[in-house]
Image (cartoon, rainbow, N blue to C red; front, side):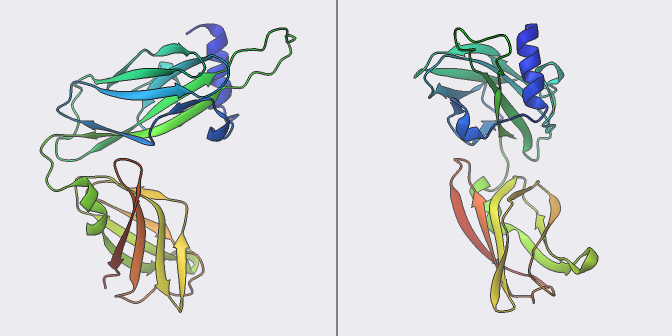
Length: 245
């Protein structure tokens, strides 16, 4: 990567990222599922702007501050750097390198797409150039996992508890081999519905807890929990469960 692109990447990764809606180059999809038995998967990029854009892509294991040089994910992306003309698209090929990963559960990585728009002709040297980065999850799904990913959200076990400072939390246990992502979590208690709206994700065979504002005490067992889960295609599915004792 040349020095100019390195400086722009550093600027973007340093936190000067604009809202995704302002980027011209978009990823067609909000997540990628990589079946473990596939040789490669493809990701489509499209330039919806009026100018050509230089795009660099890389993957990481979860560090949002990672750079292309620090990429530690076991995947190869081609092309790593490309120019996309306005109104045109580009296909990224994602190939798993074969580095050992757990065979009994999914693993999660992140795909980064950094867009560097061109400097308008005739601008002075002091022109401020901004880079835009999009970042989405990539789920590596080994072959032969039991059950179905779309059913994992409905099999979560939920418990309520009072945490530090009296903050009510909903604890969740995921006994499946799949990651469960959600956009909203709500529970009916004290005659009202209280929600955690920041979204979250629960890893396979693990537990996680989410604070629920506005409650003075933990909801009783049997209270209804509503979870807006996110499926493989980025769509939402409402799942209802009951709090366990």
